[in-house]
Length: 224
Image (cartoon, rainbow, N blue to C red; front, side, top):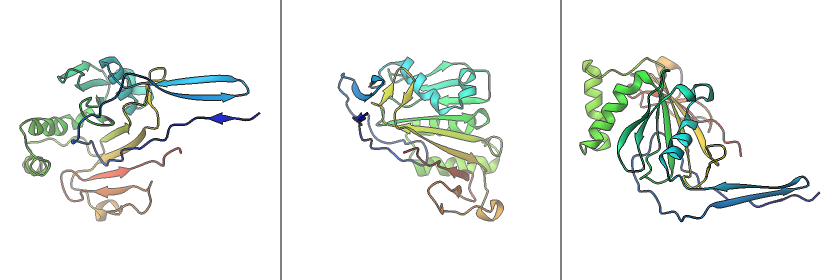
């Protein structure tokens, strides 16, 4: 039988790490509906903006491996703009929820050994330091031993997409993608055998080589 699909074209925000700029775009209160009709009947998926702490946490947890989501610690800015701990966890992961006041959707899940590094960045950003200033300060503190850089090989998982494409039935953000960052402080192309630039869209490469922020970037191919 003839299959009719009404699809909404997405504009994805491709980023290498957590975006720190931009304001959340205004969204109306109506749901964006995608309908799929085939020989077995009609199915509707209602995509809505993320407008509650519960939805914010549920969607952000998609950054974590599925088997680990229940045990994650969850932190970040709530809908009121306060930095809070939404949930205390008991495993090795910390989930940083999407900042609801910034455009798009971008959550992260990282190994708890990276928390001193992540927390120091948030602290310096709150003091008004710029990106280059934060990098310079943390580089000096890491080299002096003042700042712990976590377990070598500790991983950051990023889940990013459009914030008005949230499906409350699955807690997923429709069309969202994953990216993975494996931290290896001071690693280089020579020490890892990885190139400093990707040779393909889904090939691993080393970013910020030779610095405290050196990490392997892995961007899986998009399903579509």
